[in-house]
Length: 480
Image (cartoon, rainbow, N blue to C red; front, side, top):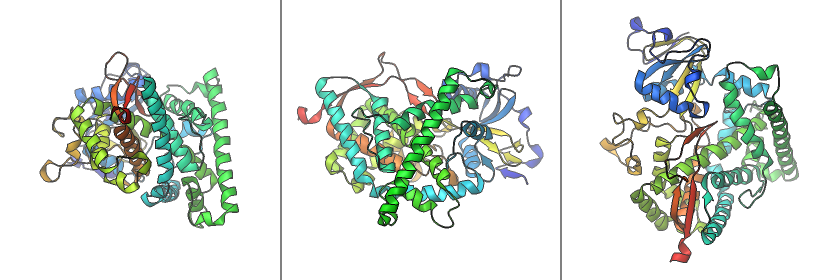
């Protein structure tokens, strides 16, 4: 069965071979013209040259690139029936010994896991864990207050990563690892190795690791084994708590317990292997995506003093005291939420999403055969003057306008679109608002820049992160 997405005239359809695009090299395709840690920028530049629909070759495999937000949105909304994540990503994960969570699961498996994850990450469930989130925010406040008193520079990306790790470990698993104060998180150390390798292997021309193991491959195998062991211990510990205190099943105290309880329901269709896969997924979603978005947002605020002043005024009016933060205050920070949306428009941590067709399809006027690959550019129309007024400017107010001047929410889709929209978006935005509200209420930013003063480089690994941001703070309590 063929699926059609906005086909204007079925008699004038184009094939992938007929599409424009950069000239491929024999066997290698366009890979020699792509830098893995800058691959998103490479494709974005090509989209300016070849238009909203063109082709690239990853090795000998052709791939349709979509840079039109309406086509991207339509393709994303046709999941899970019409499109899936590329099977190569699942293959790479599986041969590493990975246990797929809702991020990589497909079909009925995805539907079963989605129900469990949505239950665990529903706003009412996340709100129950809010005091734990505040305690981590206070921990980061103490660390930054000491840095302000010492006059020392803060490695912003690393500190925000520690914040996110502590949140997800405490809020999701009931573990207080306290990486902010120098504690060690074994799981995260292994994740930092595994995730870039998934990306690297997904783009590899030849799977050499299946025949010979280099030192980096043996280190990867070790990290996968240790990660599985640590996650299994988390689940076993949670099950012991649930058995010893059955009342926890009525009111789980962390997200892992909530997932286990949801999985234990008679018709859940999932088991502890699926729970383990989603523990790993939550570590990914709870660290890189949130910490990198926060870093980009704070950088953009510092570069736009009027927006920074407006954000601080809102925080001081609504939530001036970190220790007394409430969930209602966080939900009321509309301008800060708009700042996050604007940062994700300009600096999406997932600047592209690859898909694979599960059936013969038509996107726009292009025929996509079953198994055909599609590259969705998530930052094209969202930074185009034809879709966003003064598109290059950081202007959070655009997200608060109503009526004719309102921002088209489908132009920027940082959490995806359709039924596979990121289930952790409420938690992510809550973390972002809490950490930035803590900073704005407690400190003035003396400086936030790279060593050379240039715009931070966008580094693409599994997510897009800023490189080399250093921040210096002044304690507002001491100033006032």
